[in-house]
Image (cartoon, rainbow, N blue to C red; front, side):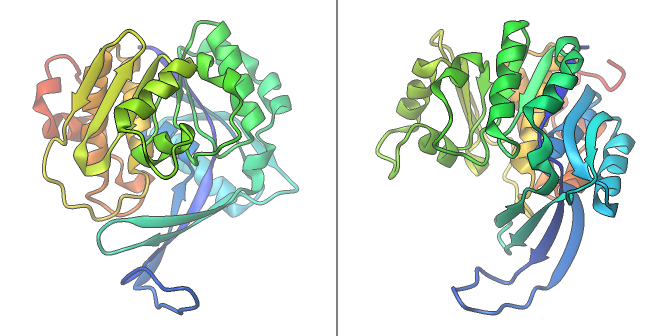
Length: 315
């Protein structure tokens, strides 16, 4: 099995269930508030490990109870955390999440120790990049670190996956040729393509990113499934597997990214890895929370039996 390295954020999520989207200036009572391990990097590492992948995490937390809890949760899932930096003069990042009755959410992130995941810490941990086969990145840590990690991994012939969230407009053009799989959602794709308001079709926006150098552009579309376009002219469409009623979509995109990496680590072709990722993400929205809702391989295979012949828990 191939080895996965996740370089990214670790957050503690404070999730409040709200009856509806509040108006500006309105005070709204939450039905409940929960404390859950999160962060896009940690979520993706957790999701991949739950599916049996060999995963290492590179990031940073504060020397506080939240940081200790995040590391312990990753360890329990089987994620290697020896390279997660504990920063004494910072707090562990936090995400304030509003969850609405339809399963949608709105998120505010306080980056805290995630900003300490800088190029100097990456340089000290270069052996992890050298040892991995698949590098999974997001944009909740300093952009310069993301660019340096992608450049290093690409130069070593690794598969580089970027989940470009939160989307931003200041990404240097020389990053894109280092990306094998760009995995935005539909809104993020249009933002990256500089298409606001959205005048381009999804295919046109994806083609613009391929022209910038990405090898594949894989777009997740929530209840409409996912589509992937490649520089070689290939395309894959994975429709939604079932008619899912979402309870909480927090972390679903991260679950998809982690599961995609886990599928590729098991040498599944890209279209099959997309189906594995779709199944894991659909299962995740059926439960509240981010990491706490991510399924293990046995549950995914029960949900998507077609993968059972090529993907067993003992593989």
